[in-house]
Image (cartoon, rainbow over the protein chains, first blue to last red):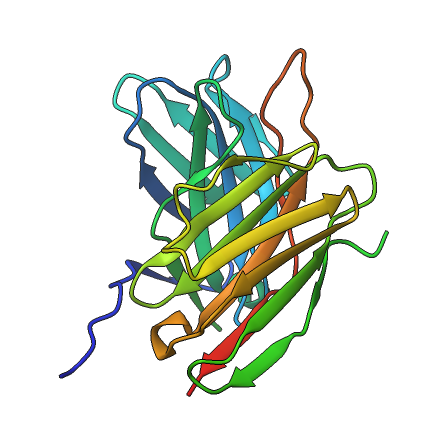
Length: 112
Length: 118
């Protein structure tokens, strides 16, 4: 029979525009959140992280926003470039373990 | 720093054969994680070690899978016997575990091993 893979949400943006990738997390006890970028054929690469005592953190061209009230995380990429095209994963951690729980990912497609 | 090193990068084998995947974590890191990534199931944590000790192996699919970490600089993931449904990309990641302060830190991923079981 035909195999059904994960349906990745896709965000298509024009080069130079800002991108916002959203993530809903499940565990209200999670207190650490992280974004990864995965390019085709490569392993996930760390972008930025945030702890639950913060609601915003900025990096180079990227900003992560955390809304604990609604359990929502977002990644904003300023002036999106073709090299930003990749799958972006959010992950959460909490409790007594140091393992990360990954979301299903969002495909960002940057149109030149 | 060379980052996390995995070998082989590609492995093609026949059903029933034993497969061993290898990982060298970043020097100084004391947590090591094995993941599997497929189109069907996404990125799944199989097992992780803190200070060479297995902490959580609840993600290991079945008894055909086993993992070891004999020392701080080397880990293996073994599948015996392999089956076509084991075909996937297997990633190893490492991080620093601190016993005080912030428990969580970013994990650094290796390039992965693409396994194909025919």
